[in-house]
Image (tube, rainbow, N blue to C red; front, side, top):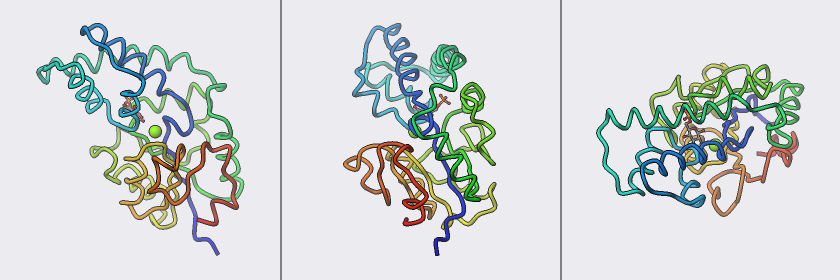
Length: 216
Ligand code: BG6
Ligand code: MG
């Protein structure tokens, strides 16, 4: 008998593809500062907090800024990002994500969001899926970034479930590591070559089934 009672989902890259919006906004900021970075570099920003992302980008551009200047730059980027996500629609939910969430709920499993983003509320609302989560833990509620397990442990706590009864769905290496560090099972969304630490890797939630979930 499976002991799985709850599923905790990362947002960016698992439920919605917001990486492209983060990329456009960071790229605009870098360009204003007089340099550029590639889409390949952008991969290194997935799952990484806003503050840490900015630090990496400034490093790529060989630029040093004071804390006050960094604060202003991060706010500037976020204004552009929010402008883009405020126009998101339900059509931008990744294939199979809504269906799998509904399947989990109909099977009596609890659901939580576990995201580093401070903008998760707007994304869930614009894409019309907020009602599918019992608990939402995001960047506004945690102080330690992934791979620290804080975000997922708070999710499990909010759902009143023991970590070992929870499965985390993640597209970032740091997120898979956070799940494992928290004593949970991890399903990687992406490439097995990258997410090899996960218990199972699928290319998207459209490949998930209850059978695969209970076999973990
Ligand atoms: C993560 C994204 O989910 O959230 C990162 O993968 C992003 O790219 C981080 O930097 C923080 O998001 P936000 O919306 O608070 O800037
Ligand atoms: Mg992600």
